[in-house]
Length: 142
Image (cartoon, rainbow, N blue to C red; front, side):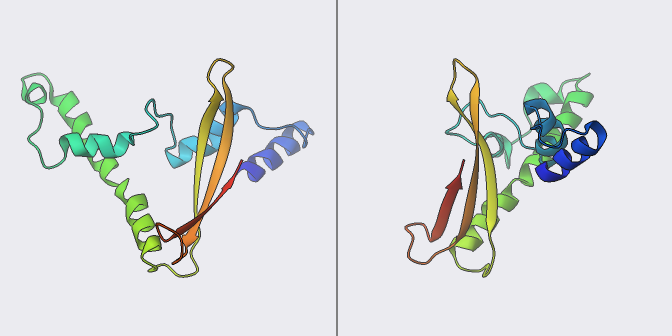
């Protein structure tokens, strides 16, 4: 998608060697894949939300009169967060060797120098490897 966006940009501005800005990468690539910033790198916000709310009663404040809009928003978020399990399930199948000839690509932005705002795009390539500790071979590209 990055190459496509650079190509599109090059044909409209005749500057094919110009990199996409952070906002362009977010708008044209990351946003489409629902990739977003997480404040706490140790806890997945999707998993945390499910842990806190799935199979539990709906929070009482959402059942109060006049909170119908908030309740609907909560229910939609719960459905969306459940779809996050697809990645976890895929990774488990990969580790179990159930997905032969499959490569999983995970991308992440890591902030290397918080004061400067410098970020590093890290691509992680994952495939099954029976000899790896978690049965997944990982290759990191920065």
